[in-house]
Image 1 (cartoon, rainbow, N blue to C red):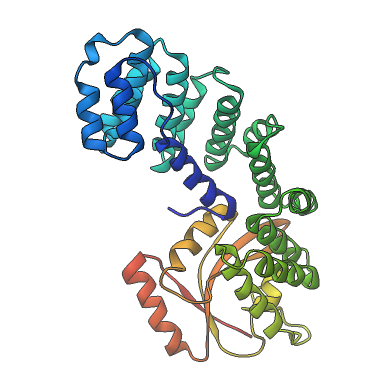
Image 2 (image 1 turned 90 degrees about the horizontal axis):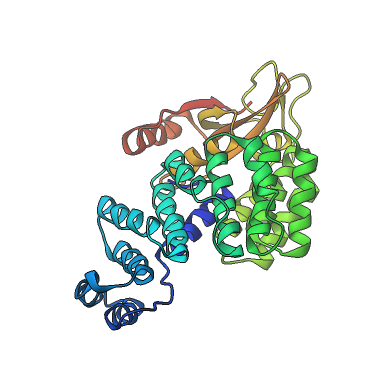
Length: 353
């Protein structure tokens, strides 16, 4: 599962947090197990931890259950240990276990399950852990389409890295809802205070949708220069190529791109397509940009020129997933078949008029 922009990076961070070792205290066996765990000697850590669990005091028991969960490779068994840690009298271990268990559910796409676990924790824990819980609770709500409640929770976080990520998430929500001016303001604020490849790329996309080609190009070029090794830099290079190679205006009286009626195409769609010849493949049109990005992320693994084009139709923004520029229909047919065979995704060949 690959999520749009910031959410792919955030999911990775969530999993990383879920496997990080906390400092261990308590009995000798627990301390030895902690040291072995930190050296990634997991088999010996499990043996040391199992040596005398029954003799642990209440606080050490929660830490032991947390470590058992981290050592367990089976999801269901790990969940049992995490729940024991959550139920322990060690509040610090309980809150950490709650966050990590929710991270497991989140990583498997069970956002509702992760949300229930996080919500059960209340406001307990250290300030950073409280922010972490609020942030990922809001992220779950966003994944579930509860954008208004998600935005309200993101707004509660006012300091630290989670505050920056929260602004990024709120900007994404604004962009999906068509509030592009608000999204641009947030992305620009982030770019000024803490430059990131994700914010830069998203800002470029907003400028495209607003029809500000030059600003979009400037943003993509800045992204490639500042973050040349980032995933977004590769996408930025593709955007630069697409925007600069298609300056020809569409014929008067005809819409740009595939000639669809009843809509006003966005600048992203207008500029991404070479005018006057060839074909492209469309793999659906989505009201939620995140869904479009999820499909495009799968297609990027096997096809070239994958992109998401935003269009306005009857007052709503739609996000089309398209791939490639083909001289002939026969050339496009091969990639249609490949996407169907390898990913189960159906594509439609669209002429570029």
